[in-house]
Amino acid sequence: MPPQLLDILRQLSHDDFHSGEEVARRLHISRASVHNAVQEAEAFGLRVQAVRGRGYRLAQPISWLNLDAFAPRLNDCGVRCQLVDVLDSTNSHLMQLAHEGEPHKSLVVAEWQAKGRGRRGRTWLAGLGGSLTFSLLWRFNRPASELSGLSLVVGMGLTRVLRDLGLVAAGVKWPNDILVEDAKLAGVLIELVGDMLGPSTAIIGVGVNVLGSDALRGQIDQAVTDLSEHLPVNQLDRNALLGAMVTRLNGDLERFDGAGFAPFRAEWEALHAYQKRHVHVLTGLGEQIGGQLAGVDDGGALLLDTEQGTRRFHSGEVSLRSGS
Image (cartoon, rainbow, N blue to C red; front, side, top):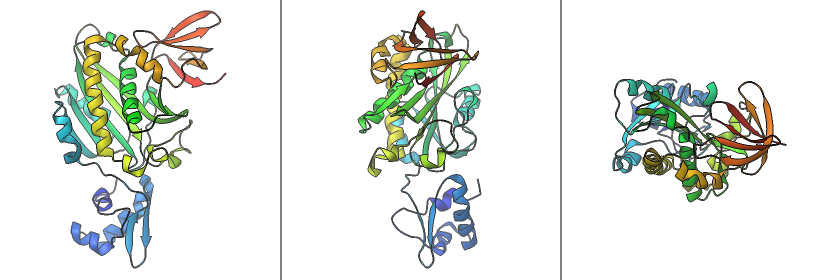
């Protein structure tokens, strides 16, 4: 990312034009630097309107992330917060910190990820200012072998927050996506550190599309959507959304650590976008298995009713696609 790009964009608003001279004076840089940064913004998925004689303004309203806007609320829950402008990946960054002894309930938030990662080696794509990307470090008393339902609990908690905001069509897709009318809105990536038989650490990565899904549709092989397509502008404050999501996760993860996935099972199934629908499951060996989704078991494994009986699938083994 070009130097000073974020500093310059934070000086602009959606409502009013600001001249290049004004922005340059505030940041103690040259007008040429402002001009060049505005020209480069589009490469990062952000459109800036430029009008001769008036200056620049953002084409869409953006709530830039601000530590003071979300950290106090999360600190009250015992969450340590770190905000970084640019990272390759919040998960990778927090994983390194975990190896260095980063404490329980550490949160890393990035304004922009250069190499965001998704499940099964996929890339998480997002434009500047258009997504909410964060990772939470959680040290469990449970061994890694008992965390199979973790991604389901996380997805369910995030979906509950979105429904509380008025997005009642939000639902979960096993094992780690949040959908609205079959289009992907958010995803979860969980990476584990620790002994299969002893206490373990999870790096819980979350990416939510807030703006700019139109630009993503040509780059992703599935239907995508964003919050701006479903909620009014005043519901798109990323700082408020982050605070609500992490607060909800804090409570759910404490409960999960004590009781496992079983107490969440019925609520998760009630939010499952594909519940009782006919689907086909693609296994890691290339096998395609059709059937009707019967839900999940107490450990979070997918249950599929097939002609040969009910079959179970685990998170690392399959990919799920709707269809007859």
